[in-house]
Image (cartoon, one colour):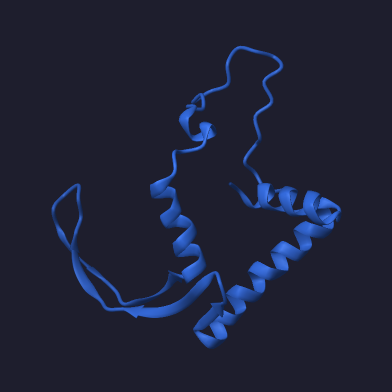
Length: 125
């Protein structure tokens, strides 16, 4: 699922235009990012906790050459799902997958002029 799919779904459910919904979804994502930068943690009840944590410098290996390289320390975002999300995901283990997951999507469109695949790009109008 992409951001565009989320916008389309919410738009249909609440009766707003996709442009209005896109603005709301983007503002929500922007607010989460700003909160993480400023506060280093955001807790969304029944969803989960995003947190900025430091990652220590380490030594790694270049997989092509085997040469040892220094990886500098940096900050990373971690996510810990909430209880509700954990329960919903755990339910996946107990139920059969939806039929849409059983179908394989073609790696390229068939030679069918009516095939209309989503572009996968987000328009920033």
